[in-house]
Length: 252
Image (cartoon, rainbow, N blue to C red; front, top):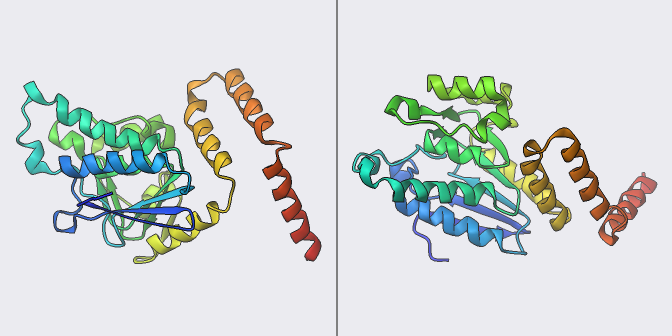
């Protein structure tokens, strides 16, 4: 794929996607949003990719929407831009593979929303988070934020527009772990490479399951999980993995 603002490398079944607009803080112009949509849609259909790492590099993530672009949008014709960024968000959220955000610096407003669409988030100690839309008289994206940190916390993040440091984000459960500055991308890549040794179909189905459970009542959720477990238990890949584990235990 010929991309201007995204870089892609694939190795050991892990796709590393990097936003590459450093002179603008990786801000989301229409061109960047379109490339995100195209990139994640393509990756989602690839069988050689098991896990995706999404980053802006070791020093930044994304400063949000390009305000110079936002300023030119008129209410009467805002549908095209709104549809564009929602397509980009959905391409990440519903990507077939697990998507891990490696957040090296600021993830603000639309940049924060990008991290929200990822399945797992890791941050450097210098990372900053903020859902700043309210400061610009724009409504926030509440879903899937409330599913990640709970409704009460999500309201605080959205309604106050305040900036949170990496450790605050970790404490509220938004970030899974904080790494030293300059180490987040390599640390997340190591996690992703380990995940990529797992069964690809199981990873994909597990993501689908995790994305749909909250839409089910408890009984429906239990039935769905039972069905998915039946799909995999006793299968050849399941047996192979058990044999490998037992063999490794026997060697100890």
